[in-house]
Image 1 (tube, rainbow, N blue to C red):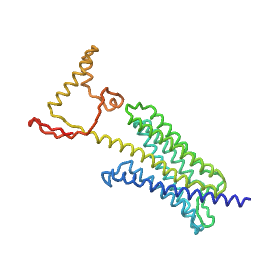
Image 2 (image 1 turned 180 degrees about the vertical axis):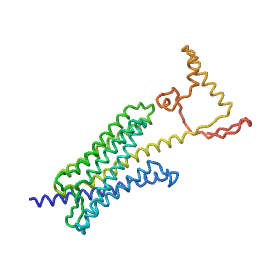
Image 3 (image 1 turned 135 degrees about the vertical axis):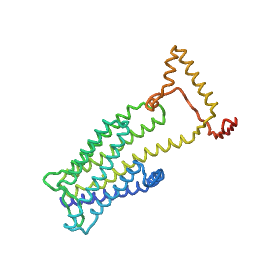
Amino acid sequence: MEQRLVTDSVTSEKYLRIASISIATYDYVLTLPAEWRFYRSQTSIFHISLACALFISIRYVSILAMIVSNYGYFSTTYTQQACQRYYLVAPIFKAIQTMTSQAILGIRTFNIARRDRRIGAVLALLYLLSTSAEWFADLFHGTPSVINGNCTSANAGKVLSTWFYYLAVILFDVVIVTVSTMHLLRYNPLSSRVERLIRILIYDGIGYFIVLSAANVLNLVFYHTTNVQTQTAGASVGYAVTWIMTQRILINVRGKSTQDAQRLENVIVARPTLSAQKKVMTGLRSQFESKSNSKGSKSASDAEFNKPTSAHNANDMELDIRVCVERSVVVDYKDESEHTSSWGK
């Protein structure tokens, strides 16, 4: 009976590993166009953006983690001595992958919180504590395990500590998703475009948390057992889920930003002549002055009109100005001295 349970455990682990490899490979091929768009958007190979660098890191660190983990498991030629030199490679790449994923979530949350320095300091401290606990739990009491020629890292000591690794990851995700979601809900979007972006950020964060927490809880349960063959059954699943969900956050945000940029490119702004500018500004000023006179506060309105408006105020206020662009306008601008300008539609 016990031998049958061990056989079923080994078979289940193989199925989980093969399934995770298949899903990760499919997602890699599916996201190759997105990767190419990341590369094309860079100004130079030596000056890549932070988002692109993080995307490359999580993508290829995850691939290396899956390769070294599954190579050790499916191999049949390892001896105890050879495994002694190899068994820590997979846990090290697992910790690096988790650090990269948490860095992406931390930077995302910091930007959502409008780069508040106090929140940034708290996030940095949380990141430092979490990664330190993860490295300690991942490598403490790890021992090489050789079964039928394969090589894995097992937690076979008197104190089972590896499951603390996944507990630290879950706690970090809870704090990060809570902080980012609270700040997103505080935003008061003034346009449907901004509202859609906020909705995408909320769904991405909650979706990431639910899917990744499920994989982490699975591994936490497996590493809570003393069966060496059961402990690493969900490791490959965790690699795949962390990889896919983290890079999806970057791809979705970039895709939304690109769509908005394309919409803006359809609007052509024409600079009129100096006399036309004066007429427009005179008309606008008369509108403001007439409204202020009706309220009996002309002087206050003039002072407010002449006062520069910060970018923060522009984001928090909705001006009663609506512009409808029905078609593109091509402008052939000539100097005012020639007193001519041609407009073609």
